[in-house]
Amino acid sequence: GRNSAGRLGLGDTEVRGDGGGEMGVSLPAVPLCLEPCPAGYTGPGGGPCSSCVAGTHKATAGSESCAACPSHTSSAAGSNELVNCTCLPGHAAASDGVACSACEAGTYTSAVGNATCETCPAGTYTATAGAGACAGCPS
Image (cartoon, rainbow, N blue to C red):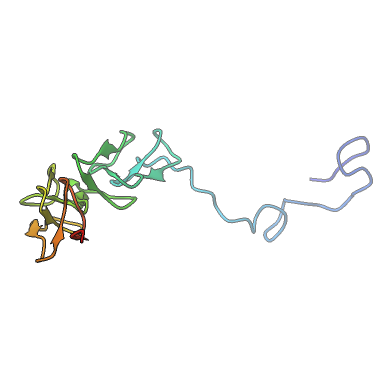
């Protein structure tokens, strides 16, 4: 419609917003985000959704919180399955998505995932459990 005196745009007599291509018509549609957050994301019903932080996961759609990965594991941000939780260096398990145990003293694993702890090479050692690398023996 037209503006009239005493309103925003005083003196503006152009027709605005009534025809195609005029004010408002060319703006992109804004989704209302009424869908639940997808797996790997969390947020209130209707959004906004944010990805699960590293070290957490969420396998279902909805507003539930992301769950922490099992002990001594981590995951990338946005993880949507428990099996995305993998062992940290110095820890091992039979499969991904389960709690990992620390490698015993004298063993290590530098890999991320369900690697097996290996014995330190000759001339190296680990004094404590959970080592991600072996150190050279003192002279």
